[in-house]
Image (cartoon, rainbow, N blue to C red):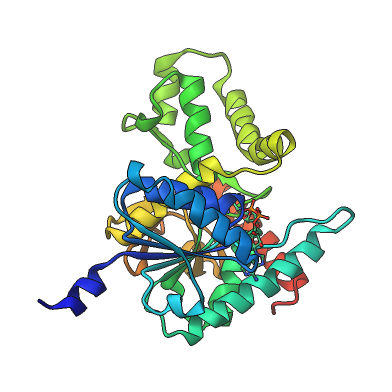
Length: 322
Ligand code: NAI
């Protein structure tokens, strides 16, 4: 029996950061049956051990998967390394101070990964995710397709939810994307929005279910943008939906699904942009980004995308990365 082949066929996912987001992702990933091994790393080893114990006690109730605490050596043969490690904002600390801390944390993890000669895909989740995806690419020296940020996959899900709710149509029939920064400068790509294959421009007049649908569009965008603030105010952190968004990205990497997802990608000429990471539609496979879809946007959307890129370039400069 060729055990080497069997070993290489095992799907190994390393999760760095065992806080609310990392643990929720592990919980959802374990239930999905996508991974053969889930390895958890956190600088707080007691926390990592606690999360591992809590998860393994659920093993009788989900598909077979090995779960344990790991170390840097585990990066070597991982198919996917998901980084959710980050510092929590301290009272009085500015957004810039926090960003600098997370640049240091994610930069050093990316360097550790690079020294382990891994051939997998790196998925950055820690905020500000677009800036940190940029940092991870620069510090690891990896090809741009192998380092992706979770970007606006979560925001796009929120957008689909609000469009579905407003139009009273199953969310699975709504295709809609948020592009740009995972943050305040993000934009809703209405020109790419379809309900049951019908563009929103054609669908709205046919439905006639609301007055002034252009105004509704603004409300929906606002709700998407404010979602994280509302949830954090109410419960301290967001972790369920992002955990599921991460499983969706993982599924496309581990199963080579070629799903079209708005991950944060380093652009190199696409959409007329270069040397910045932001969310654009990408086809995701086992090599990370198999293709960036350089689709035509409405003029106003293109302007907003370029504005979002400028906001992110400024953040990269403020953080002292370039
Ligand atoms: P958390 O504070 O609960 O967990 C962070 C964990 O990282 C802690 O357990 C901490 O010990 C660990 N950590 C810190 N430095 C480390 C290092 N050098 N090596 C290993 N572990 C380290 O935070 P939470 O709620 O899990 O959020 C994690 C990150 O995910 C935050 O930056 C948050 O803003 C971000 N996030 C991103 C979303 C997205 O869509 N991209 C959505 C929601 C949260």
